[in-house]
Length: 120
Length: 427
Image (cartoon, rainbow over all chains, first blue to last red; front, side, top):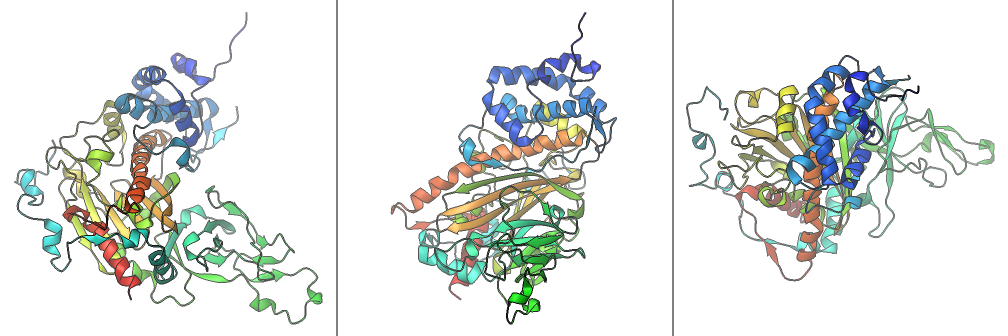
């Protein structure tokens, strides 16, 4: 019998299907990923993640910003990706901002998140 | 709708009497409300005067001290507009914290033969750290306070006075962690004098607890003043932001997103307050974010509007955020829980480097990074809309089809900036 390694805590097995592709550590990468998806895929992500957000926050808030287990940090990234997806899914109804400056002229240089991820 | 229980007035009564007055220009009757020549937006000669009489004379914001927290931390800042020649190369500056913890600024030029000392890309927003600055050309070594420490093969120089060959300092001053420099060898006033009205309004704002979380930049083909003006009035919100924040600010009470109050100060400084619509029903996720903490315009009027120190100077009842226009090229926009802001760096008469940013109260727990990401994303996407108008404005201004612009009461901040620039250029 083989077991598949999971990237998320067992309580969040229902989100495991997003773990391979939807976890990105920076705003720049999350935004680039969002605009490359279809609105159907963004809707699927939004509809799956949003009902789980209270549980997700409760789980990650067990840890301090200075010592986050890797699996909790992945959950944090999934939560941040939801916030990236939200305006597209809730308001624009398309992946990128309508009537906006060209994507490649607008540079996201936001600082890294102030967290430390424990090796595991 | 939430409203303050202390004030027994209808929502309409608690807003300016827009039906019968133009509240800003009525308050400042000395200001000519007529059309404005477009020359300052399109003339290369005018731009040269701005470079000489404004940007090379005043204090310019270059970054937050939080970016260089430790001794030896530094970043390199290119400032195109203070170049020495009209078509000259863009000078760079070293902004650092020296080994004693003091913030300093230097011209980034080796005092041996002039070579750039620190070659880091100024646009990557990284902080670097060095014990010494060492020139890559011949290895001259400077301390972080700028003094010349070591010259290879020193005894082969005649008349080398090392005390006179330190990095050339630039006047540098810090207000509430905002670092400003002034390239004038003899600044005509202190930073405190230049920013006095803002420093008074913001004296209690807890900048020290707030951290930069989002930074975005774009080089736009537009005059720097046109770029600033797009961010210091609300008249555009109904149209430009129709896709991202269609009803957050401009609801039934204020359909054209007029500022609820504007304060004009000497030397081009100005401060504008905007309201949220109390009728705005936020999308589901925003409701969730508001329950957990705050968004960047979460107030929505009511009892919370005056609870964040340094915000809402005129006690506007449906307070959203203030826009403090620091002359010449900085906007600082505090709101309940943080501030966002803009820098506008002129490159040529019709090219500007824009930097937008958002700053939140420092996160205390991991989920704060999620709620912050919500406000960050909304604001960034709204800035994608703001910046798309800029090139189009300049194309029209340069087309020959328009000689003057006309600005309304709610566009008094752009008019005030324009008038201050004219005054300094003509002085």
